[in-house]
Image 1 (cartoon, rainbow over the protein chains, first blue to last red):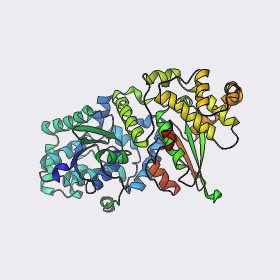
Image 2: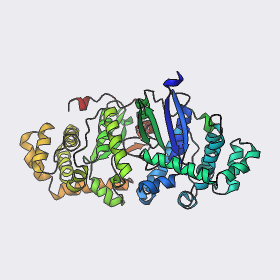
Image 3: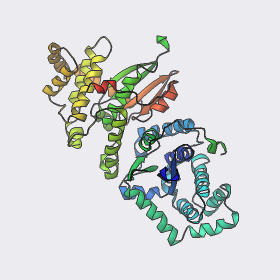
Length: 229
Length: 229
């Protein structure tokens, strides 16, 4: 039974609101579909640079639509997403490099499953994309880690680890893997089916994804994880 | 009963492959949902210029993904879409201005329903996005019109009408209406719900759209229209 579980990788960055939607849906469906979900925290800035893509916010009608679209999807998906007061500053000036390095460090140390990575990612999204809070300072990362249930005694060391060459290289190589799969943005879901990697971009291909892995799409499912938020 | 039908407008251009997918789905669901579907043929070139949007084909990873995504969606939606040998020439050099003026002319003259507009649009898509055929020459438009079942005796006059100021203005004003709704690309679906216009871009928001108009999304439905193709 275990061997028939299809490996599904989710590449994401907490700076990306559509990634949050995709993340929550995939975390719900990991218990519904017969899949082995692998969380792949990566760096969106590196994806944009590596693919030559530009953020979509520069076309006014597109920006207005995205805001509306995000609100509607968040409500329908039951994810408490809310745009920060200055999305451009949050996304492009402050960014997520230190946050994603921290997630990578936590992943490096977490040995049994990925509960810590999942909870920490969610808490970081909650800060930037729900509460309009910083995710660049050490104190911010620390606060998110405590909320995510990480042992307070380990957080200092994880913060230190997150600035090491080892972790910088780890985040770089995960980002490069996503680029090699053809990424030009996040979230990116890679389904391994019959020895082939099927890549899905965005948070609007779940029905197609289900079809591709031989499962059923049954809508967004109750947001038990977000109910806690 | 009639008065409770929600008006749903579909703005599209036959140069756009995602519009074909959206068009076929909406044509199937007009018989499933309690909606009054209004076909709104418009000009994508004017939308790109008016909104300042750029075609997405300039980022290599994005172009590769779109090709793959279109093929997967076409198969799943049961629409016989196939990219032309030179999509850039077909979309950006040859374009769809004369074709969409012709559709607008046919719409201007069609008095009872929109069967002619529907069939003609489908035949034009079939030429450019399935058979790699021209849609710019009069002879091409004429051939599509015959296949769409328009009376041969009227086609010459419709072609003439399509170059008149009346029809040029009609296409311009429909395009402007889409821009006023916030368009930056096609397809664009505008659902009129409780006096509000809810706008959906692309061919991947049907589930959300159904939720918004109080209907159910039940997948792409059998492609009876495409079976004829």
